[in-house]
Image (cartoon, rainbow, N blue to C red; front, side, top):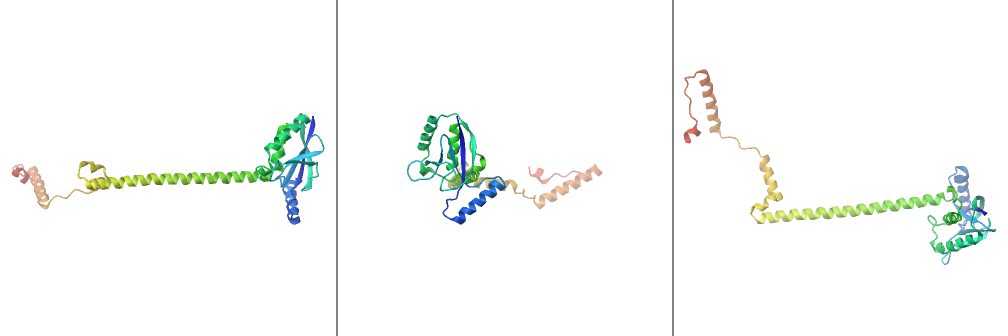
Length: 248
């Protein structure tokens, strides 16, 4: 059994002293001041004086080692003990060989596959807790933002597909209606009763008010009403037959 030690550096390899100083100040404010995190490089030490980490290279593995706390590319910050591993030195070397094949340098990605992600994987295989959240919080936040953006773009593409599909359905429906109207106008048979033109005419007739009675009919109806009233007042008044009954 042996301790697993995490070494943490401020990332100050930008090539600009002003940028490097800015990163150091950001890390002090966000990590030391409010405890959120910062821009860090990390490496794991186990069995020996070397630390193991991961970085970019065009060919071969991105896994590399250097004397603990002595990485010349960054500014050393602090170290902490993550736990004790039960892995033997033989098992540790086996794990490192596997990681060397699985983590090529060309696969390095600042947000999704950086040195902190490597250390998390290494610690998990050693059976000790992963890195504290603040070490890689900025990268994780950026990775989450990228995932949200990707999901949003996917939803927009899906919505676009649904709109195109709905437009095609609407076009086929309108095309069918047009064909029905054309076929209905060419054929006088009863089959055109289902066409939009026939339906429109039927609805128009349905809502059009009935024609008013002629003036002669209105006068005749008024006379009959008067006679009925006189009959009620004087039963001897003779009833007059309507023109309609005489015509029959």
